[in-house]
Length: 94
Image 1 (tube, rainbow, N blue to C red):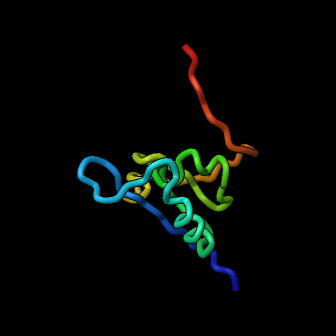
Image 2: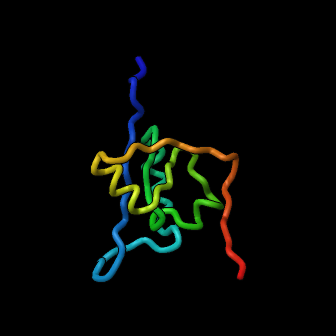
């Protein structure tokens, strides 16, 4: 029997002034991959994945920026997966 809702997990790695641990350039990627392996959907933020996700994408991960993650956690925002067929990096030239 399949459940109506997917099993979603959220992974947050604290950062900032005074944080005893923190996420830098995808250093939490191995932990994220492990958590995603036992979840239908993994919801995480930039400090967990960063640019490393571009090289080792996790198909069932939703990569959400901090404010949206806060709002989702407070039940004030719904998340909708968007797939564009690949990872892209945005740059700005002056």
